[in-house]
Image (cartoon, rainbow, N blue to C red; front, side, top):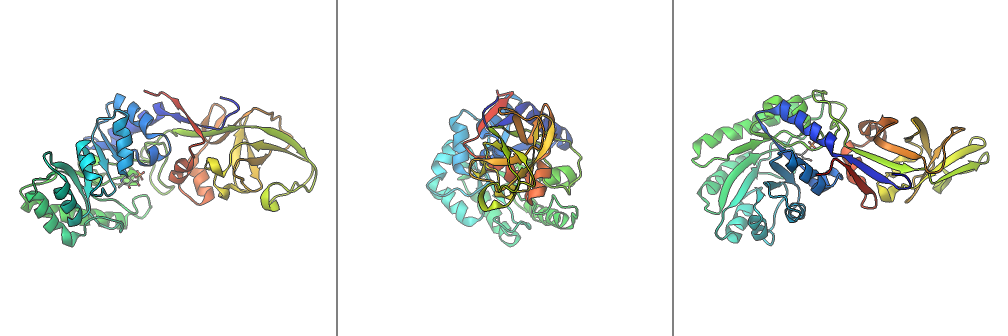
Length: 369
Ligand SMILES: Cc1ncc(COP(=O)(O)O)c(C=O)c1O
C-alpha cells in the first residue's frame, strides 16, 4: 500500500502464536490479554479473529475497553483486570464482565450495586508485584466474606509476576510459593474459585509450574519475547509491522544540518530520504540519530531529530525513489527488523513500541475475521 504510513497487522501470525501457546500450556486455558487496544493492534479485530478460532476468554484493563468489545458483538467472558467503581458496576454485571476485587471495599461496592444476578468476580492477590491486590494477611477475611456473599459468583483467583521475564527466577519463584501458600488456605473454605491463574508471557516461556488453570499471555501473542532474558521455548511470529514510504529524496550539500536542533550534519554531499512518520505516529524521539529502516531490502540509518510528522534517513548513493515502501519495524517481503531489537536499542520494551503507534496510523489487517 504505497503513499501511506500504516501498521500491517497479520492476524494469521497472531492465531499461530496463540496456537503455540495453547499447545505449550495445555491443559491450562488461555486468557487472551487484549488491553490497550490489544497492545495497539486493534482489540476488536483481534478479538473477532480469535473468537473465530475458538478463543473463549479475554482480559482487558478497563471498563471502557470491555464495553467496546461487548458493543462490537464479543459475547465471550471478559475479565477486567483494573478496578471497577460503583457507577460502572451495574452495567458491568449486566454485560457479564468479570470483575476483579482488590479488597473488602470492592466487595462492599459490589454488594451495594448488584441486584438479582450475582457478579462474576476474580480476586487479585498481592504476592510481590507491589501494585494492587489483596495482601496475604487480608486474604482469609476476604475469602470468608466472598464465600458468604450472595452478590458474588467467585469465578477466579489470580496474581501477577513482577520479574518472570528476567534471567534470575529467584523472586518469581518466591512469588509462586507465596501464591501457593495463600491458595492452601482455600481448603478451609466451602466456597472456592473455579479458576486459578498467574502466568503472563515470561512465565509461559519459563515457569510451567505457574500455569494452574489458565495463563494470561499478552506480548507473546503479538509476536515478541517480553525481554531478551527469557528462554525462547516458543517461537512467535511478529504480528505488527510499521511501514511508511519515501516522500522526498533530497541531494544535500556538505555540512548541512538536518532537522531540529542541528543534531546531525551531512559529512559530505549526501542523499537524504524524508519519511512521513514522526512522533505523532508513535516514533519515539529516542530514535533521533539512533535507528534504522529497511528500503528495498537494505538498512539505512535515521539521521537528525525525530519531528512530529517526519524522520530523515541517510540513503547514501543507493537507488531509492519517491514512493518506495519503508519498513520501520516488523516484517516485509524484503526482510525484517525485529521489534525486540529496536526496543532494546531505544532502552525500552516491545510493548511500548506497539502501544505507541497512534490513531493517525491506519491498521491494515491480514486475515481479518
Ligand atoms: C495482570 C496482567 N496479566 C497479564 C498481562 C500480560 O502480560 P504479558 O504481555 O507480559 O504477557 C498483563 C500485562 O501487563 C497484566 O497486567
